[in-house]
Image (cartoon, rainbow, N blue to C red; front, side, top):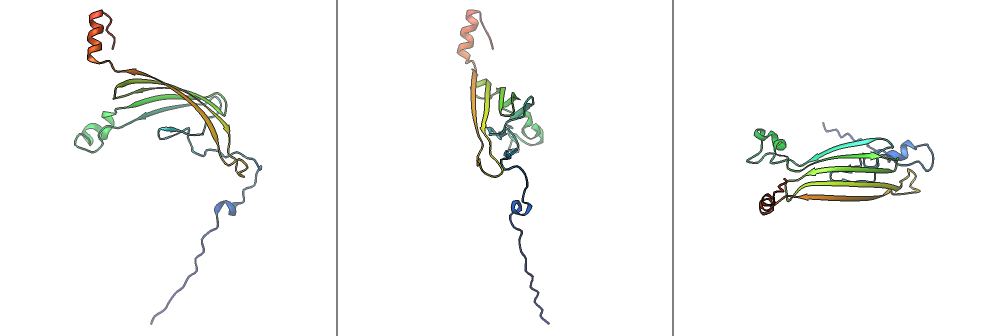
Length: 161
């Protein structure tokens, strides 16, 4: 005996329309990006007044290749670029930050400073559809000394590493 069963399945409407959020018309959107950084880039998010964000970023060495695996703790033992930074919230919309990065290239050390000012905030009702922030960042590199420069400085009696 052959029987055919037919079911009608209906998907839900847009969740925001179903919930029908009640609240002030010009309420600000919070945590669009969940952080002030997205991988290696700054976002429009700022941290709150009198809060500090401590961040350590790094690149792994060889994770699973011929020099990788458990013998170098899957790349952690060969971290090449390490950046340590602090961001501080002066106000809810203004952050300042400082950082130092250790590089594996010609730039041995990189000192950074930044200030971020969020001057437009997105609202839930889309009366302001975007968030806009201004970021000013400055970097000061300390170049690796070449062997000739080191020898020249040693002969002058002023060797620094």
